[in-house]
Image (cartoon, rainbow over all chains, first blue to last red; front, side, top):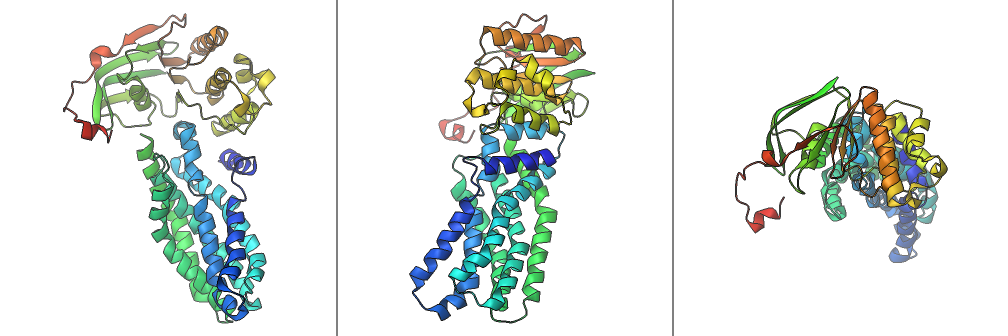
Length: 218
Length: 205
């Protein structure tokens, strides 16, 4: 299991691995929004939590089809299916590796990008907390979507359409937690809901992803 | 240790391709599958490897004893030859990749990125992976594609050593490997067409 995680991280870091793609996209979104909205710092402060969450979610979405498609193309998935590693573990590790290379950098960079959007100072900790709790769900749900579309050439469109509705609850509670934090309100309730979604998906979805993958490998 | 297949029927896309196939390979035995393109050799090998369910019949093999190798080798272009092999060795719980490198003369290439290898060298790396799995039953689908004469000899040597140590090999190939092996032509087991496909349906298969 450790070998698979290390290999996935190695692949992401090396040339053409796609590490930094999500981060760059996140930067582009947050840097361009002020130009689009105009120089009204009060308005920017109001929409900052929502924009940051939306940017993180779309950045995550961008790299989903890489989770399994590359391993499918070169036959690695077939070989992993024969390996002494349950498929559930394989998809869990893939999701974890995706979070480490996409979700975690977003969480770390978010406070910096919050500056660009004039996020109120009270909002930083809730923003980081909500992203930290929410982005694992994005990776796990995304892996499920990737497993559903793995055999399809250029399945990226279908993958996005399948995954987007599943992302909505995470986005609602995540952005709500960040917004309440920015307004100085308590964000405990949305954070709890967010944690619930994340732990629920981590516990249940790998089984669905593995089942779907077994069917798709046939 | 043996690999037994009893009245096995395999299907591709829900349509039976081979029916009523039976054979047994004992430890140290090798069976070579022959048959024209599209007859269902790959489907049969994938079914035996457990990648897809059988339509009917049983496959008798110890759990987690089969190593499968097919057209695509599962090689990562940006990792070196050594890293590729070490990864599979760790997944299968074996650590020593030196014999595998040695058997396919990969030492001089060990630190080269797999993406920089030629097709035949990649194939050798893919076959070397079999050695690090430590599995007794090898199920191989056209293993000699893009190998030159020397590499085919290397491969035959690796199969020989594997069989000598009590392993089993089931190989679909069209060339003569110079092995003492039984040959099974799967053509007589072709499934009778269960339904006539029109063009519109073929699009889904």
